Amino acid sequence: MKALFVWLLLIPWMMRPLVGQEVDKPLPNIVFILVDDLGWADLGCYGADLHETPHIDRFSQSAMRFTQAYAAAPVCTPTRAAILTGLHPARLHMTIWHEASADPPRGKPLLPPVTQGNLALHHTTLAEWLQSKDYETTHIGKWHLGSAGFYPELQGFDLNIGGSFWGCPPTFFYPYRGPFGSRKEMRYVPRMEGGAPGEYLTDRLTDEALKVIAQAGEKPFFLNMCYYTVHTPIEGKPDVAAKYAARIQENPNLRHRNAHYAAMVEALDENVGRLLGELERRDLAENTIVILTSDNGGFVSEYRGGQVTTNHPLRSGKGSLYEGGVRVPLMVRWPGTTSPGSVCDEPVTSCDFFPTLRQALGSPTSEHDGVSLLSLLKNPQAPLDRDALFWHYPHYYATTEPVSGVRIGDWKLLEYHRDQRTELYHLAEDMSELQNLAEAHPERTAAMRERLHAWRVAVDAQMPTVNHP
Ligand SMILES: [Ca+2]
Image 1: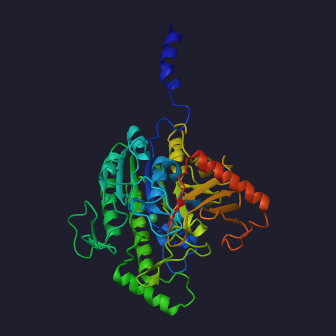
Image 2: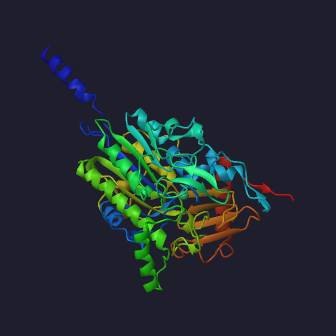
Image 3: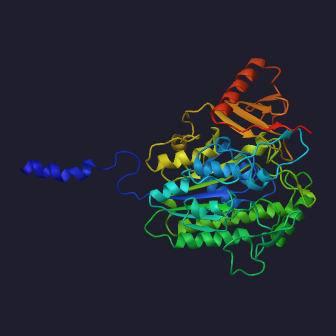
């Protein structure tokens, strides 16, 4: 009888979770900071020469910094869809943003496919999955994943502040409304009432985030912090921009030469500092996973008469499948898992976040196109069970024509859809992609191309068609 009693006492202990979370530790909060169009070389800790980013640089010293992180796509919407679903944009048929999908360029040799402008509701988003784990979920800032029937509130977020159909605000200054673009389309940022003239959007979005953190209760929270900056319109605070303008004038050798863009990066940095400081102040930092990354490479076209940024030493920028278009900053901090100041050189991609967070919370990984990075977060040298990364952009942009790409080890192959011409680069020896080795390595080129074609079939990637005049 006594033995049975002891066994009964032991039952709860025997039924404790054996994997993942320790028994008494609450689930970690998740703060996902997604910066729009932030280039790989735009931050001090990634080699920026003009921009001042002391807060993010300090954060990188407390986190794991990835040197070869990739966006799933070279433009906004597809990468955002990949982050929230863990699925590749090519599989989602979301390879460009809504407005561009509806109005493709005419008079080009190829007609881009008609893609999905909205993130279909039947996918389980990261937010929906976290809701099922009893998280409070908040989206703040840029959404750009479809029209009103596909807004954050319908994709797993309890609260949406500032997210809408549009990919950028008409202005970064209050009241954040007005005509935008050559068609003078009227735009606004929702839920931004009550500000004062001169108020700056990046500051305001952080103010809103601090309120959300202040209201956090017993439940863990997921904050999807999607800054509209550093996307166009390129508008810094005037006094900060003036500081950078003077510095650019004094230093003719600086690579980064856009004063307003530098001011936008500085405002971002300051606000990331505020956000992280609030986690410290409220004693939440130790049990919060913080991820900071970008949705595509830096924008290298001209805006109001000046080049916006440079991704040097990487080639090209947003829109392109050269490294400058898809390689992005990425830092992950999870105290107790990531080592402060660690650096990881493994190629990783936007599709990996969802499976990573699933495994971090003790759930088995599921059908995603990405893989869990948890082993890398514990040990940056750990082997990752994946040998290839793919990109598919069957569209035009200022920096490209329709193209697909694959990276296997240090080799990267691009295939242009118009004439099937290929380019092959060895990234370890030529990160600037200056030397096309396709002709020198015909067998490798053929094998990688075959792999790329097989992948396109497997994910049912949409292809452009010939545009008959
Ligand atoms: Ca973007």
